[in-house]
Length: 429
Image (cartoon, rainbow, N blue to C red; front, side):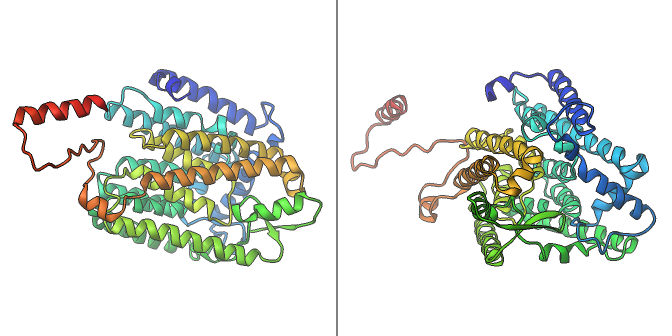
């Protein structure tokens, strides 16, 4: 499949992008048939409500469903000014989607890859994960993460774009771990300066604009999260597990959920902390920025109390950048992720009610989704995991260059014999 998409030209990509996005829009607007398609753009109606209040100067401070940093309100407001948010937001999402494709095509040209696989991966997003890509907010921070990763060699620019992305939705802050240790000081200064300036402006405009943080603390286990899977299987085997709609998501209401929530949060801290230590020790300098970003965001997803289907957009964007310089396990990670995203498209919106009520088939689909995501996370971890420190000292690695070790001997052969011996070793490999 990957070899096929490597042969697509920029013109072909643009034509296919138009066709796939028309399909996604048609399904979301209920013009084209799609199973339970009326729920694809259901959140856009909520965005419309928020936008009308924001336009009147009322920030959604006391709304428990508001889970966004303050810059997100500006996106909703602009969409509302274009039309109603029902139309305006989708137009903005389509623009962000197209810009992502454009920067990926440009990256392939600048890197002289000879193919456009990065853009092709992004092109496939709505087909694999569903038309929901244009009906949710996540396409906007993903665009910022893609731009930041492509600018990872320019720390000031990368820090700026990551700060803007973080003010839209918190997860792009993880992109800082993707930057080389030598680039971190400049990137951090740029990130902090942009974040502080943007936060002050937004707080002056909308008092209480950071109230979303309190809402995040109170969230429980969403039924799609990794931690909720045992409860959902218990629910699917003739037992009853209570669920409730809270903070914009359906959460498990059962004994032990607070312990599970604490445990997975601890996993987040431990795993991301380990990556942070490797970064500060300089042991990730030979790993590409997108590969580090991929594993950090995957960890954040699998250890989150919420695992909504639209989060797949994040990984599509990062995988697309990974394709510029693919790592050892890139193809297997991509295949696993695609399988999981397809299972997610079956689950939502088509089988979501059945999953909540405890039917076996959607629970199996959710298990496939989580299993493939965990497997992809493991491979991504192995892809960046540094060798033991003593091996790094004894055999310094050079990216993309195989290390050839010639056994030492007390006999010093003539120079031409040594060259012939090395040539024979290479030929034998």
